[in-house]
Image 1 (cartoon, helix red, strand yellow):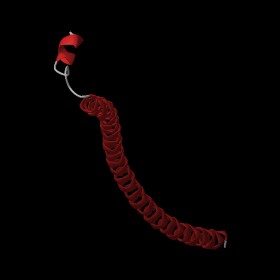
Image 2: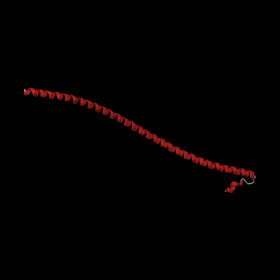
Image 3: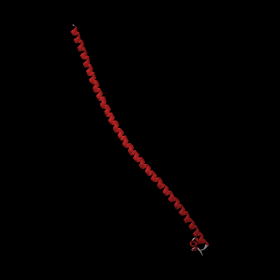
Image 4: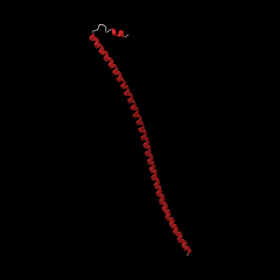
Length: 120
């Protein structure tokens, strides 16, 4: 089949044949270069897609971490409020204990005084 492709070149001058050969070589070189660039393009596109997926994955992870952080902050706030309430309740109860302790001491003194009066 290559003989049929070459048939059209018969009778051409050596200079023209040389120029045709140079052009064919240049076409082959450009085809190879195009293939290499196409491969590079496909490789870069694949790398870009991988990076896009990585970025999307990191965005999702970031969103999850932000939600978790928000949840933990709310939990901390709730725990702090509960702590403050417990501290307040403790202060109230300590105050009540002090009052009752004072009342107890007063009652003890009254009892001692009454016992003294009874002994007389």
